[in-house]
Length: 276
Ligand SMILES: [Fe+2]
Image (tube, rainbow, N blue to C red; front, top):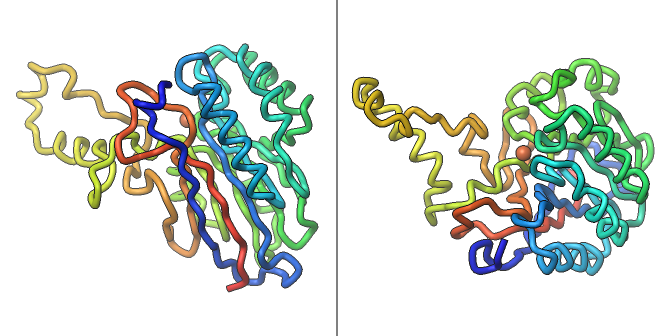
């Protein structure tokens, strides 16, 4: 996407407080990137290069990628993987897949293999320990896949131990309240792309307004029947949220769909872990 429509890259910096975080992990730096949509249209080479350079400049301990590397065809993943190979991280680069990464039957394996071949660890209902046993990292299957089932993976964890969970779709935070999630990292929303300053994503208000239009009117205007089901919880379109006892951070992503972004720039996130 041309930068006039996407806006310039922005770096979001936040500190997240985690109870029971081992002292040895205090101050560890995570970098999150999401929703690349590397398809020749939605993410420019310049934006991608800048995001990777930014991540490297931040000197992260751990780099986390939260899905949607492509849009429909899985083919561009091979070129994207060569770029992502440049990512530098103290303890590794870990990734989950998004709904666009399972678009075709073969997409999941093609994307997983391409990322794995450049040293990116892809988690699909799996637990990894990049910082050791005291801070597990969970990567869930995409919510729209038939394999989305957090019970099996979450129940393997000791409730006394803090954990970070990667889950592409932020709506999953609702379900994940059944378990301890010290920090959930998601993407998927692109922040809503068009944001009304001080109020939030336009789609949140559009959805609310639609509820007040009677069905007999909607019948004459089919476009008013579209529900924009990208997510249910548009109030979680971006940023840090408390969901029950859990914390959710939603990254605005790097790729941009038409008509572009307004007050919602593409994002690289720096997260510092702090003991609560
Ligand atoms: Fe998505």
